[in-house]
Structures are given as structure tokens and as C-alpha cells.
Figure 1 (tube, rainbow, N blue to C red):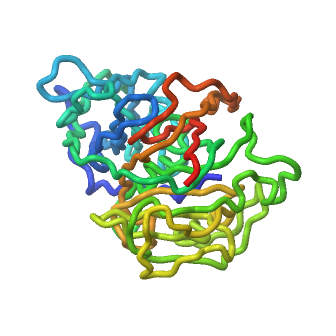
Figure 2 (cartoon, rainbow, N blue to C red):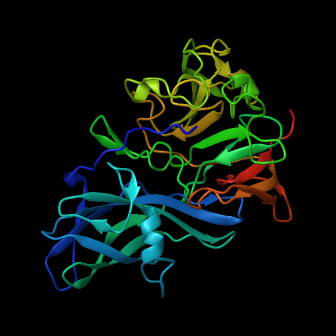
Length: 377
């Protein structure tokens, strides 16, 4: 279902050296992009970002503990122990997780640090890594500011209820695996990307013949503009996939299928992907208003079942919609109907459970597993 793009290693020139305490250099570290505070449906504020690591020693190293600290503040803001590290330290080439880095290899720590809603977000972050190999050492590095810009405030791209969210920010990772190199840069364009499917009472997104797109509850649903803004690019005419089967692909630009890309202004560009063949109603240069019809949900591009893929990036560079860094956003309203749990178990054992009290949400980002209702126009 997910729009996943090829991942690649990170250039060594992008890192800052982080020597081990009392010893030779062990790791090079950097934060891919400064995090921005995002209020989410768990009523906490999230700082979502990636710490890129490279083992520059001659021996394997293993991460045993990671502390996220704010300079000048007593005690860490967040701690990842060995079990937590095994779930968030990504080998970007193999797309596997673990705690070890072989000599000369890189990894990406996919972090999600939260603070209570209304609490002050830290202004800066630094990281303390406890590593072991031939000996136990401590490494400090990956300093970053926290960008204090608010997320974008958007209207829903869909209408109605039973919309299951597969997006950010913790395991199971749907889109955060897509850290990739393009045009000489490294991007996490899909950090806050969401795949929307529709469910009816349970966890299934279809009824009847699983091999027919028409069996999926969301197929043919109307897609609407999340804000005012000009259409930058569209594609239509890509044929529908057969569910559970991926078509051949030739490059990142092909993975979006039929799409609309909208310039939201202020250096933000929205991607609506995998739309139904022949349904796109807008053309490049059209001026859109919030809530305007764009087309229909389909199953095109890198997609195994009908769904809407939505995200926002900060660049119009080619390939459109993916050669940029992810921009956080919230929706102006939605109702939290239920949650799907068990998605991160092995094997997944999804179960729909009751949502917490106060289901009406304003100005929040829905998290993976949420089942939401955007209401009607």
C-alpha cells in the first residue's frame, strides 16, 4: 500500500565528527533536518527527525543507549535503551533494523521525541550515545536546533469516516524508511506522509473479491484540496493496478502514479498520489480553493491497493513531490473514532479498539493506527 522510495547510504561528507570520550573517533553524526513541534492525536507534541550515523572506526560498534538532551537542562528528554534502539536504527540499504554498525557503514536513527501538550518544546537538542565493541565508550554529537515554526494548518483531503491512518511516527514505519539520495542531497520527503484507507467496523479495507479495485471501500472517493493554491503539476492516464500486485517501475518519478501537486505557498508543496485513472479534474496553473475537487482515489503507481497517499514537501525540485524535506502539518478538524492496535507486533495482529475520550480534534496530526472521520462538506 505505501509509497516507498529506494533508500541509499548517506555521504560521509555530510557528517560532523563525534569523538569518543577519551578515545579515538568512533562515530560521525548529524541530524538530517531540524525537527519542528507537531501536536498529534495522542495529545502530545512530537519532534520527529532522523539522526544519521557512520561508524568510522576499524571495528564494529553496537549502540546500547541513546539519550536525547536539551543543553542546560538536567536529565534527558528521552532515552532509547537497547530494545528500543533495535526498533529504530535503520540500515538504509537493507531496510532492516538492529543495533550494530560494521566498519564504514551508516545507519539512520528514526526518532520521535514527545512532550506533553502545552509544555515548552526544547530550543536545541544534543545526543549522547553509549556504544560498545572492544570497549564501552560514550559519544556526544548530532546537535540541532528545534525549528519553532508552526506546522501547516490544512483542511481534510477526503471526506467521511472509517479512514484508517498509516503514517507517522513510531513503529511500524510506513514511510520513514524512504530516506533517499537525489540530486546530490539526502531527503526524508515522506516523514509525515499518510496513506488513507477506508474501513467499515473492523480492520479490513475491502469486502468481496480482493483482486478487484471496486471491492475496496475507498476506491473512487473524492479527493479535495487541503488549502488555497496553484496547481504545479498533474499526471493522469497511468493504468490501475491489480490489488496485491505492484507494476514495474523505472524510477522515483513513476512511483506516485496519477497525481496532483499543489503549491501551497511559503515553500510548501502538497502531493496527492495514486489517483484513479482518468479522474484528475485540474490542470497545471489552475488556482484552487480549499475543498475544491481534484479527482478520485485510485490504485496507480507504487500501490498494492486503493488508497490516497498525501504528504507535503519543501521543494519543487524533480522528481516532483519527493526531492525535498517533509513539511509537518495538522488538520483543522477530525473525529477520532477508533484505533487499530497490534500493527507493530510480529507478525502484525491488528485489532480495532475504542478511542480515548474527547474524540473531536482540532489542529492535530493523526497518528498511525487512528481511525478518523473528516465529516462531510
